[in-house]
Every structure is written in structure tokens, then in C-alpha cells.
Length: 172
Image (cartoon, rainbow, N blue to C red; front, side, top):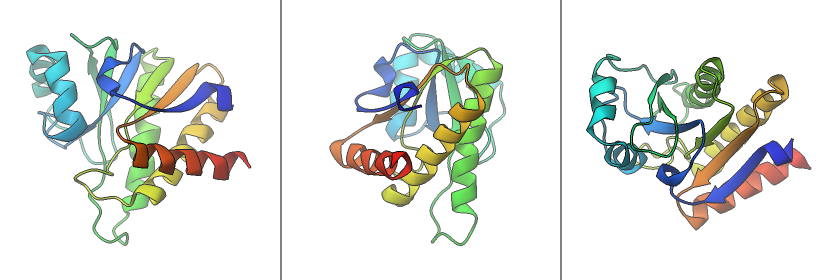
């Protein structure tokens, strides 16, 4: 299983995979952080296609083309905003990962790269988010042996450490 799931530090907009996941907002019309970087790298055609999708609810996922990105597709998922943890945030975050993988898989994508969803401006606690992401991705890979590879692309070293710790917890 470990060989089908890797954790790296890097720039998700440079990954040549079937699909990268965008930690989007519910409008799907671009924003800051990863969302803004993906929209800038993909070019204006991504925004045009996103306008036709009429947004996306938190925890759900929708797919578009990748345009100028090396990835063939972008899966957009709005993660939850952290509001103290008693408002279903953990389940919504799990839904974001699972639904992103499901949408990618149903659209023929077998290699997927994720950012750390909701841990930036949405303030989801990083260690908790990493455990949810790793568990959900490993479960999906177990259920879908034809999914070739999932990469968690961490923006910085602290995020990488959190994901490395989470995978060690599940692989022990």
C-alpha cells in the first residue's frame, strides 16, 4: 500500500498526474493559497469552465480539465472551515478527500495529487487533518486496487512532517 501513496514537499501545480485536487472555495471561482496558484497556472479557461459548474458544497467534489497544467484534470473540493471541531468539520474533511478520489476514479484518473485541504486559511488543525487525510486515502486505495498512485503534496516542511507522522501512525 505504501508504494501507492507517497508524501512529498513541492508545488502541486507542477505535477504531471491524471488529476490534481484543488482546495477550492464553494464558488469554485478562484481564491488564495493553492486555489489561486492552480487557477493562475491553469490559465483563464479553468475559470471559464468553473463558472459552468455553479459552485460546489463543502465536502463534495467536481472535476474540470487541467488546461495549462501538466495534470490532465483538476478535482475541486471545498474543505471545511475550522469552527472549533464541533460542527462536523472532521466528517466534512473526510468527505472532501473521499469524494475527490471517487470523482477522479469515476473519470478514469488513476494518479492523483492532493494538497493539504483546509489547513491553510481555513485553520483546520494540521495534525488532525493529516490523520484524516491519510486514513481516508489509505482506505480508498485498499477499496480500489486499480487506483495506481496518490501523492500528498505538502507546501512546506511543517506540513510534510505532520503527514509523515500520520502515515507512520497508520503503517505501524
